Image (cartoon, rainbow, N blue to C red; front, side, top):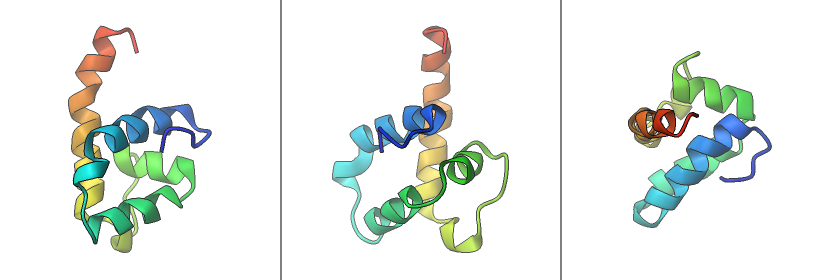
Length: 81
């Protein structure tokens, strides 16, 4: 999750994985892995709300990533990110 090649996605998915991966159970863990298999730009757009994900990816784990992303945004702003 940390080294996808698209820095913006790395900065969301890496910390998310660090914070939540141990607590994810099936099927959420499988859904997370399926999301990681998607193109970086598509996944990032789904997370930040630039586009809607296909229905089969619009699952609770994506909502959890979105929530994590928006909660982390003020902390990144404090760091100048």
